[in-house]
Amino acid sequence: QVQLVESGGGLVQAGGSLRLSCAASGVIFSINAMGWYRQAPGKQRELVARISGTGMTNYADSVKGRFTISRDNAKNTMVYLQMNSLTPEDTAVYYCNANVLTIAAVSDYWGQGTRVTVSA
Image (cartoon, rainbow, N blue to C red; front, side, top):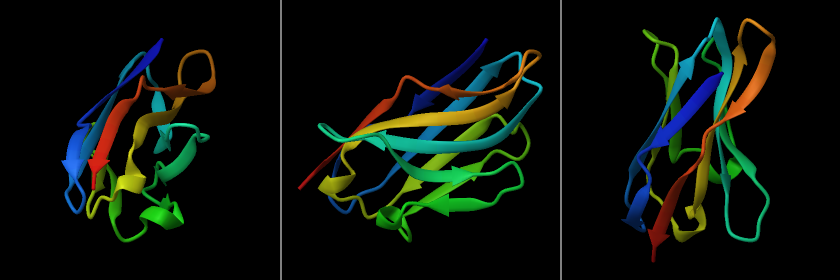
């Protein structure tokens, strides 16, 4: 079994910054892409940023230039999301996602989410 645990969410004023972290654990052979998604109240879950196993990144248009996704090259089981210039529109629950190769198969796993609230 694979677990993803997010941390770093909280309440911040508009214009502020937060850094989210996600740690993967379990019987993991390798992790391919890792990413961050978010779900605001009454809205569908959406991709925020994603990073491949080779370090290629892609971002939602709404966060380009403000958010940066990165991975821990040493452990390769950690992914981070640096969020700058936050706006109230960034308020959501943020979920970590990882595409993981285990002994059984390649599967997508999700964390439990961490809430980010940006006040005006």
